Length: 123
Image (cartoon, rainbow, N blue to C red; front, side, top):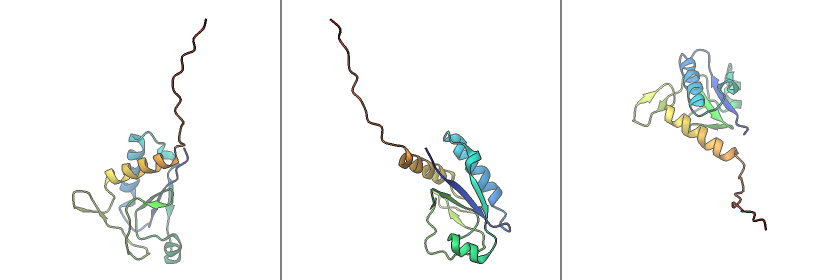
């Protein structure tokens, strides 16, 4: 299974260490290797635009943001997430992170053909 997990951040945002810790925990809980997370700092507005970065922290799995940013502008800012219970948070809901990891894992696992159990009879 080959899954690319990225955490993009802006240095002036205080939430990225917490988001990284929560992402590592989610990956560990799902049986994935948290050392494979690509952590990348976005340093300029030009880079934010090129990367389609809507704020820090941003978590992407196989290039897909774990929570759609909607029409948010690209830029060097702190990001706001909406938790499942309706609260606003500087980090994504852990359940959203786990769901995104599982969806990506399901998409990358090859279909395994099932074989019927055959009994070989000997005479």
